[in-house]
Image (cartoon, rainbow, N blue to C red; front, side):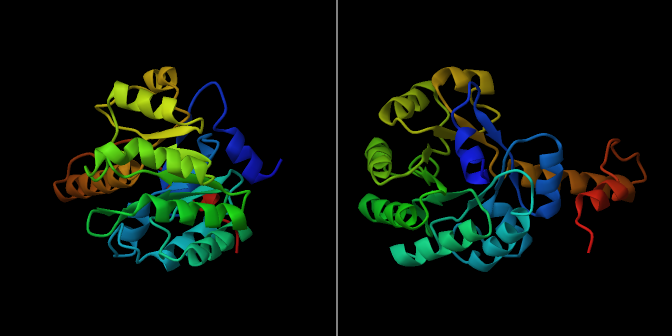
Length: 259
C-alpha cells in the first residue's frame, strides 16, 4: 500500500488515530521511532521556529521545506497548510500538488483567516474541491475554526456539511471539548472527525466512545519542548540537577540520514 492509502486507513480503525504534531525533522523522526503510525506538523511550531507568526499565511516556503524533509520518514505525514497560503483555488491546489509530489499523504486546511476572521464557507468549499480535483489521493482534513476563534458557532454544522459535500476526507473542529458538541459533529458527517487534544477535555477512551476517529496534539508538544528547554537552562544556571531521561546526542545523530 502507498502512504496515501495507509494514512487514509488509519482513520477507520477501532481506536482513534493519535496524531503527534512535529515542528522539524528530528522531532518527527523521534516520534516515528516511538511507534506513532503517522506524524502531523504544527503550524505554530513551524512558524515560530522560523521567527514568523502563525495563522497569517506567511510560512508557505517553510511549510514546503519541512514537508520535503518529513516525506523521507517511513510513516505517512500530514502537513498543516493554514488557510492554503492563497485565496485562489488553483493556487492552493498547486501547492498541495507540490506536497503530494514529494510524498505528503494529507493536509489540514483551515477556514480561519488572519485577524481572527472566518472564510466564507462557500469559498472554503471551493478550495477543498480544487485540491481534491487535482490530487484526489491526498487526505484533506477540513478544519472548522468556529470554536477555535469563538466566532459564529451557529455556522459550525453548516460548514461541516458544506466541506463534506465539497469532497473533504475528514473534519477537524479544534477548540470543541464538550461531549454533546463533539457528538453533534460526529452525527452531522459520515467523515472521520478529528478533535484537538485538551488536558481538560474528554479522555482518548471517551473520544473513541463518542465516535472520534483522530486526535491531534496541535502545538502542545512544541510548547512542552520549549518549556522543558527553559527548565533545564534554569537548572544549569542555579546548579541544581537537570531532569533525567533526556535524549542523548548519539540518539539524535542516529535519527539523521547520513550525508
